Image 1 (cartoon, protein in one colour):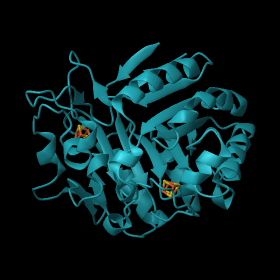
Image 2 (image 1 turned 45 degrees about the vertical axis):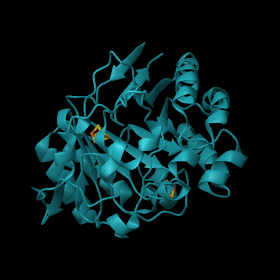
Image 3 (image 1 turned 90 degrees about the vertical axis):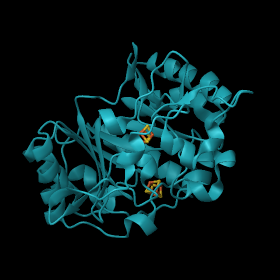
Image 4 (image 1 turned 30 degrees about the vertical axis):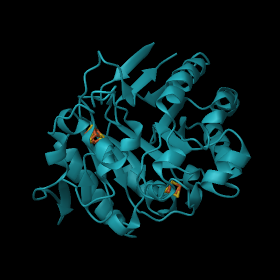
Length: 331
Ligand code: SF4
Ligand code: SF4
């Protein structure tokens, strides 16, 4: 069944970067250390911040991220704390290296998903993007997690560097025994800004031709697939998740963003100070959310306008959707 997931309007999602350090140097890494520092949060602070967001909503979902979250020796304690507090679901996003023997320190009933990032169906393509040996490590990590009884997802960030290998992914997923597949679109943040939009972002025609078809094929194998909508057709309504959904992107320096495309700038609308969530002064991302422009997403127009196209009258030919608007196909 195919449906548009409108930012899971009744859910609260906490994207919790517990550190920014990572063992890899992916070409498109979105972590911007100039903006988000090099800190690693103490377990006491992680627990306190989990409490802060649980007070906002008891049924929030938490996704632990980094950098590489398994490099944090206290990740198991953070997971157990989130479970005890009552978070609805707990996910760990990992590059697959699974440091500190994480699989033996948490149980399958404590973690809803381990989500593994792989950016190529072959060793050659993945390692060109994510670094030498990262393919083998990630594949081995998925196999170990599946064998230990954990549910797993695979995240594939589509760019001009790897879109040609998407058709090989269905067989790989089946072989690995992964439960879910997330396609992401590359955004111009962090490291990918240096490479440039025209070199990394795929054309609209290519996206529309390849992505929905591959997603359908993968769902046919019994795997739930989600992919960002990116391009809205003329009859579809634009909505900014910043105004209609509750997503919080938390960084170890205390910044809290509502929009991931704002993360390269000091535009965060909230911050955690003395373990309290406070609003930041204007001008911040919230002022952008309220702007109504014919191109759809304001941040897209500001940071990656190359994916827009205009007719002879200077009107945009389509709108760009919020980067958090997804299509989901369940088997
Ligand atoms: S994208 Fe993820 S795995 Fe790659 S360098 Fe950045 S934090 Fe590390
Ligand atoms: S990506 Fe665009 S539409 Fe989505 S929250 Fe950010 S500014 Fe709003």
